[in-house]
Image (tube, rainbow, N blue to C red; front, side, top):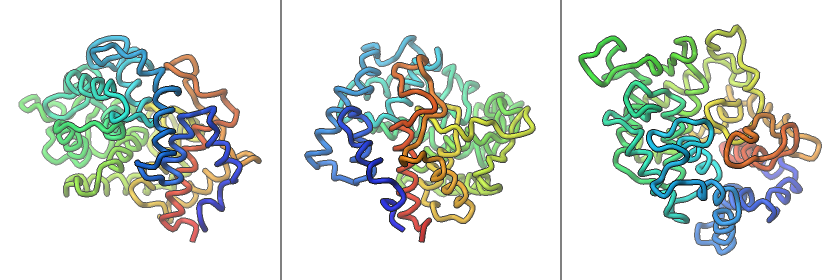
Amino acid sequence: MAWQDLINPETINWLLEESNPGVRYLTLRDLFDLSQNDPQLISARSAAHHDGPIATVLNEMHPDGYWVEPGPGYNPKYRSTVWSLILLSQLGASILEDSRIETACHYYCDHALTDFGQFSSSGTPGGTVDCLQGNMCAALLDLGYSDRRLESAFEWMARSQTGEGVAPMGDKSTAVRYYAGKLGPDFVCGSNNKFSCAWGAAKVMIAFSRLPSSSRTPLIERTIQHGLDFFFSVDPATAAYPSGWNDKPSGNWWKFGFPVFYVTDILQIAEALVGLGYGNHPRLQNTIKLILNKQNQQGQWCLDYGYTEKTWVDFGQKKQPNKWVTLRAARVIKAASNQGAFN
């Protein structure tokens, strides 16, 4: 079954409305597969950068390349450099369209990327954690940033999951070791009571899905398999992954949102796994059904989790149909369909 048969045509028309240039651009780019040189896409891309939320975020940037405060940019949430770059990447911003984006990416790497490949909330190796590492690796690639230092970031992200060449946290004789936040392989996280963290794992797998296959080393391929084994160890639709101090999964798993920072939803698990080509995996089918069943009667998806008044732009009211969330879902359905999920 083609993906177009699973989404109301009026929903696509709704996404294409010129009143939301950002969603219109990404719909043309991601659902219609227009050539980068297509005049309609060029016009939509320009409008998204000059009239939409991309422009709002960029206009808040300091000329040096940071938001709010200089330095590694993790705080304050959710307007500082980390969150602004993640937001820009999810809005479809591109270095090719605005040179300020490259300035910001370069500034961030200068101040938050350690010599050993960790993206850090503090600028030191101890400030690393999977969700930050995955978010920033993915965001910088999505923004179009090219920097040889990213190779070390991807290598650390892979090595820290398999454990290859990473010393235990207490071994201070080497700098390439685990720390209190990222304290073990297989997505183990100090913020999840020292259990594997599926929120962080989703970010890591999203980042690897963005990496061209030609750039995936044997180490990265092994790490991707680690991630697949982790996510498919249960039915992803149940989100029955280690929950830290709780005896059941966070309810946020079932709250589809935009933007997506470190809080994660089941839709993002699907985004990561279909991004890696596993849309037709038997273990993912209940997740695809869950996503389809979240549509309202008009074939739209609602905003269940948001950051109203917390970041630079508001993206709609909770519990109301939302174009950004609908676009996220439509992308997954399209990719899963193209991978044979509905045959």
